[in-house]
Image 1 (spheres, helix red, strand yellow):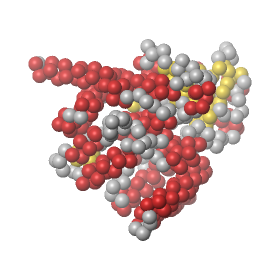
Image 2 (cartoon, rainbow, N blue to C red):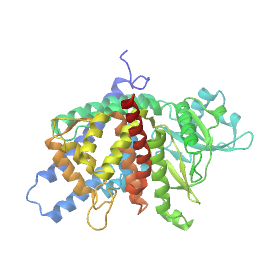
Image 3 (cartoon, one colour):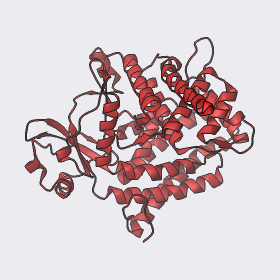
Image 4 (tube, one colour):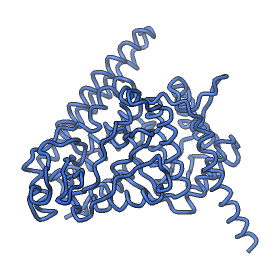
Length: 451
């Protein structure tokens, strides 16, 4: 048998073919709906905008229905889109955000079979008060509330049976569609992203690895009283079952509830941003999936991080060079920016450095007297349009895989900051963390040269 990506066999051929046809047809319908509007040069701007909005709503609904029916990788993709409130159309955010933690759950007997296989007994024999209905259901698993025999309230995350085979199939099918899209629309080449997905999905299916990741980040951030990561209950954890402390908190995107509890959303955004700066720039190990279904808030405020299935460790040299890049971006030192990008492993089609400069400037773009950071929705369309023009003329041909997850985290945080109506100065928040590590890199480089 051919080597698989997740370690699981793909679905039988007829099921693989059916999923490919369903996804491919939806892809074609969505693509053509926008292409038709784009090619109609007679439309007035107001009418073009109206038709585009209608297409957004129809396509988001179409994708939502397909994802809830097929599950697997499609749901994870929708969760990502719905978290990008800064750049995704509001129609997509409104419709696809329903998939953040309310995916249609699996029947309880299926949950029982997984727990019996992984932990060796029926959940009622292991726990007291194991709820039949899940408190959350996502792309790979659903979560049930329970109580251990010694009285601890816990959350039990149970992987869907057969989900590894579904993910294996989806990875193969979507890779084909991504290659087709790259051929017909060269400006939309997502093959690098697919390569990263192939590396990350198997890790997300290993709940023991997820438990170790959560403990590592909890240790790194233990000094912060404004961050909480639930402890792992190892005696009730296995590869497909993860049991942790239960934390009753408010979803980070539930702004009305935060305000009702007297919690300042802007303060929440600051804690989240600082916690990620420390994870990425100081410790080099970070929670890489900050969508609203994975971040919660307690009065204080305290930000609760859940679901460490997608975590990443950065090699020290890469982390220090990334700090160098951040300092170059902050100071807008174009020569240093280009050198840092190239040291990290970025390559461009030609030697012209403007693609890398444009990419760097897009991170902390500001405009006018208001000095709005890149997360501002009014700034992003203009920034993206200018960046696209430059990259199209001299495209980035190679992007290091580690940086893609950092970009993803920055993008998801950008969306959350917009939802939280953040007023924090992103540059001022990041600068101290980056400056410390950039100085360390410079000291190491100086020591090496002296040696």
